[in-house]
Image 1 (tube, rainbow, N blue to C red):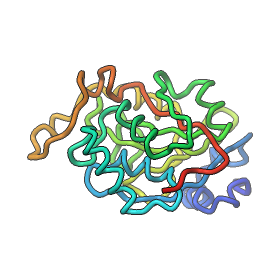
Image 2 (cartoon, rainbow, N blue to C red):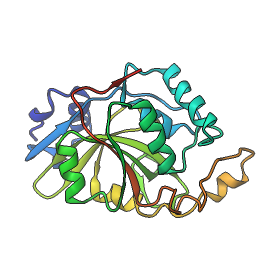
Image 3 (cartoon, rainbow, N blue to C red):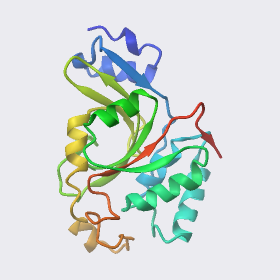
Image 4 (cartoon, helix red, strand yellow):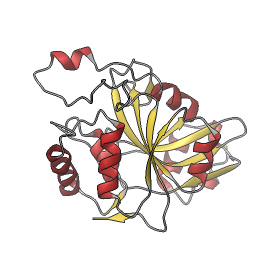
Length: 226
């Protein structure tokens, strides 16, 4: 297996070697913008994913985003169940970036081209036990940030970070797209918890929700600073 392409990116090379990701050996092309990792506390996965796009961000930065989101009525405990709310947060905290909502499959030529041109994505998806994309009808909704892609002979992989792991994740974009396209229902288990959540009008599958939607963060020469 040849992972020499990943040597400039130790966090990627480590995953390729440690898990013997033979499908990533000698890819056709790749693009990657390294991001710092943050671990989430409580249901702050969306806020943490956004903070990763801000250079030199830290726990105080995440709290600043949380306080702003709470003031704007987007969240109660850090949860973000609306792509529209996430867009407004990105516009406020990434002032020098063009931000837009994308609706549709992630495994598209538009998204592939966008990633190889240096763009980033904020993507809601259902998480499996290993934090990879799963199919749970929206019951395990989670946010990640995509900051790169790897094109092999037959598959496009995305390079992702999220608040439940310090390691970078490498996922088949077809699987991530499927997960993003079935976010239909707020988890019944969460309804039973003694915690209130802020849901958009129409729920997570509605026009303000998560289902089949993501955020495009257009590239610039440098990422934002607090």
